[in-house]
Length: 142
Length: 305
Ligand SMILES: Nc1nc2c(ncn2[C@@H]2O[C@H](COP(=O)(O)OP(=O)(O)OP(=O)(O)O)[C@@H](O)[C@H]2O)c(=O)[nH]1
Ligand SMILES: [Mg+2]
Image (cartoon, rainbow over all chains, first blue to last red; front, side, top):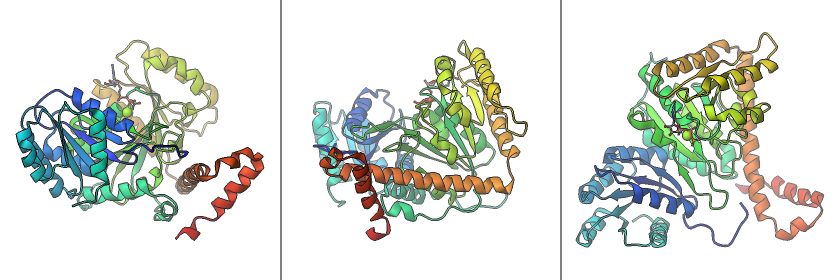
């Protein structure tokens, strides 16, 4: 690659876009996946209805830097907690976790407390989501 | 094959080492361990034009081998955007519930700077996988069709996957990917035209093969929902492995693998150096560009560490 102005912000990052839980709508997840790709990331999508254990296993096998959970079912609290726990037990506690979907503002604090690094609702412009993910990945581990 | 008890698959360790190798640049990429004299795992490559069903057949082959108690590793490559280097790695999704099997390991790769159907540092990643007691390694190439010839140097059996709509491409493939295949499959045989394509491929191959001692690549029909056809493919691959087996051959394959590895690392290095040369260099005569490149190239790799 020749050096050009503006290296894509997510170049060299590997990101798993995951659909845990029972809701069957993945349009949002796919839109995010494409936006992350266009920012230079290598993106893997799990497909629908994966358990937190399955997501943790894929994160380990694929060597990702981050997992983005897309949850529309309202179970984001349990699913985020179980995924973060699953990642730790699978030896991938360093993987950053993001949550997107229909997340009420009153749950933000709980999710942050679990270690979720970014929370995105459909109201947020894609460029902001991408910028926020890039920034969180650039920060050192806590 | 599975007589001796083997250590459980250390998924986390393998995941980490593959990431390290994937991201290694000069000179670290050159200092990986020497490939073992004999391969511990059967290596099978699946190649062919986009959308012909490579991943679907990877799933079928993996499921069959896992059912026989084999440990199976899969490396599946998808293309990187030449502009952003971003990629959607979509092969995994075709694995379905097979992805959950405890003796399976699946890694998706983006091609990055490779243009031959594989990915940067893939040879080193295969070697690393061999140290985790796999019986079988499946490699799915990018799927550009004609250009995906890199896999030949790294696997023992190349499966070319076509489909009924591939008709127009066969002429173009004559002198390329068709020549490197050990087994040919016309997949999606449930769709019209599969038998005609298979006949056409057989004709094309017949024109070339004349020496009696050469392996004659079988041409099979397969379809996703026909378990017998997937089983027949697995048996054709087994036959290919049974057919080879003299020691010289093993040495030749190992050498070809190492030569390929060196070539692909050099290719990556040259691409980087070309990006680093001051733009004015390219106003000079070509031989001066060559000289500048060689000077920088010979400063490596040992000087760096
Ligand atoms: N009708 C039919 N469709 C099939 C068959 N096998 C696979 N497909 C479909 O063909 C499409 C492509 O299948 P994949 O397995 O992803 O093909 P691929 O060669 O891996 O594709 P790329 O990696 O994108 O090049 C999917 O929609 C499959 O469901 C088959 O035997 N019959
Ligand atoms: Mg595929």
